[in-house]
Image 1: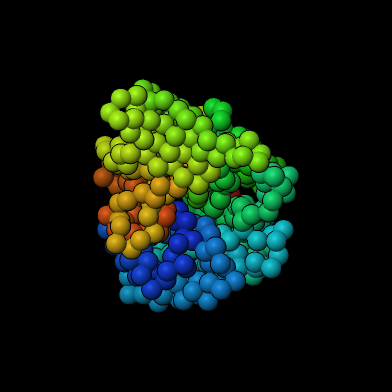
Image 2: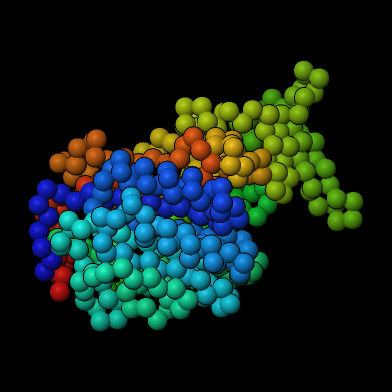
Length: 411
């Protein structure tokens, strides 16, 4: 059995799609790290989990050396010097197409935390965490995690891409919990996403997320509360958003001459010199007034964020009060500007099981200790803003679930 929490342990869960950082490491990486360190210093957590997606960026063969520098900087920085135990798991094995996910899961344990253990999935027991260790290449053989890429028939058009999940399990005092890093499929074409509601792509994400939830709650291991945080690639319902934005506009359809396939959709005002309100192409979402997605943190558009609705019994989330996390400009001088490639959406999320939500929303977890927000709202962090959840895990937090979930069975 692990030791006791005395005054409650600060937990910081961060998800960050870091693909952009390795395209322009000189400019973006310093800013990203500075904002991350400021978040750590602001919340002063005892346990930090950083789930990264697209480690190495799009040109991962050329960029993996930048990944090593990024991790080295994280581990050696003054801001992180009080975190004397570290576990870093990087899927860098890009030559293995059937296994490569480009996921990276990093865990930092504060020197004052005496009661933390990590689960060995092979031995089926918890082990003490000592020192700083980095694992890469073949994570499949590492017993301290479970990693899977989605089956090939889950991928749209059965084309491999870097999508899957990594799961680790931790025990803090009397409570065990799973942390799952996830990357789901994106919308390849705005036109296809617009064609029906809900879109074809939301169906592929739903299937993949169901696959992950089934895996982490199957009979192989005891069931414990779980946090799933990563790039879910959840999108607003494109059809409904376009109908809302262009309710008084007329639509022009432009087709390719050789295939008759829809190439672009142009929505014009009926009057006012028939000004173009929105132009939609495979990789273009060019709306006349991008500010609407930032006003009041974009809350007007939360009504179109519906991909989680079919998981409402299995996944929970705190209220969103930050703007859509994607797709921000990758220009280092543009901190708040969205690119006009996709409709802005809350792709990056921290979700949790009902039992995990009970841990987060304990009565003694004062509101000031509970924050669900983004990192670097005013500076360029790449095309995704990292999203985090900060809360305190109080002594006895696991006891309410002990009988039902056996989450106290720490060896």
